[in-house]
Image (cartoon, rainbow, N blue to C red):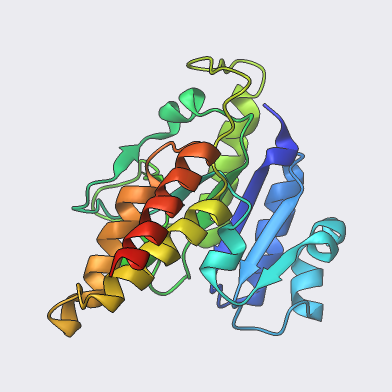
Length: 237
């Protein structure tokens, strides 16, 4: 497992103290990559730096994005954390299942905002959802607490994990950016034939499409083939 392949992604964090505490937790277990999407407080600020204690380097090296797609464009596998079980066709995994993840790929752990967590729309970008076992009558965890539990567990298996399967070295997995480009072309074609009907169901249908493509382990070649198919369909009209 390469720790440099692991990113901790905070989606719309609301409190400076939590951002700082998350940076501290990341450094506690010798990880380095913190990503923020639309943080509510000004980033960075004095409160964030103060609560990060000795992890100011993690804050200074962190990346900030204005939307989820841009933040995930270079991530191969997205694992979304959620206290709620989602009634979606997506793989739900436990902490123990992290031992089976291929950490040779770039992995992003996605955390929702303190108030509302992750929406189904945001979950649709993930390959897996991860639920930390807690009191079933009181599941909600503080953002930094959720992150530190996962960081500690990853650190504990770093020398123990094994790759679940071997692929040909000639096969290269598609990046999130390549999948996003292919999906955008697909959606453009579907819009042109007025596929998303009725209009009020468009967002839900897009969510389902993302669920289909993002959970597939497509190669870059397969992604190019599908992009070619969608482009050809457009020319036929």
